Length: 236
Image 1 (cartoon, rainbow, N blue to C red):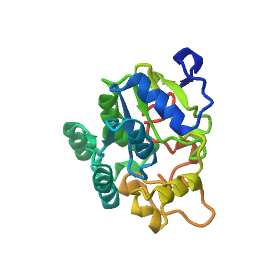
Image 2: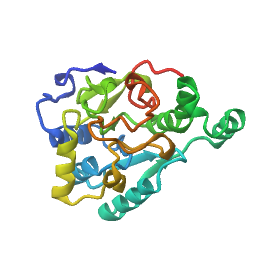
Image 3: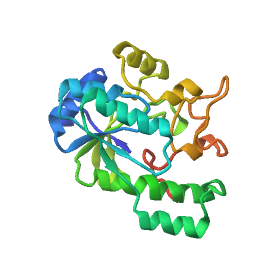
Image 4: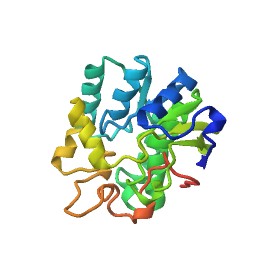
């Protein structure tokens, strides 16, 4: 990603998350959408208070935990919205499974990235293909690969569209406090020791003192713990 001049887009960059969202939705709606992984509904709550017709989409990899589907259902019911779902191309999943087997992603970094590319990156590319901007829940504290995430970036990997990260400077505790204060739906896996949630086969609870991403691809080094949705120069 490359940073952009806020002033160039008519925004001074000094506002809170709600201010960033208001600017983004006013500027790009309807060709802007919130990417939701159903860990919490903070961005959805903020956005719908600004624009009740704000769009929300998600990627179903085919391997999400049941708690994640339950969270998606609860969010739709709570806000009275419909999620725009995108799925992997079944031919690509079928070929990978036949060629490498159901657990190939644990055999090497290359194999895991191939799985993520098919199940996550390609569907995201389709989801973003008709948008001018997208909104994410990326936060700097999540992992070393996100430590320099700005609130507004140019997403060069997706045709130069604008990427909005309103919560980039938020902490995990601040997210939890907002969810509790506003009584929002959240993923119940957090009550079972999880701190970051992805596919069921690639996510586990974290232990005492571990960082929030320790439960993601726990067999890999920290600098590799990305699925390809939010990184620069990511390759299989």
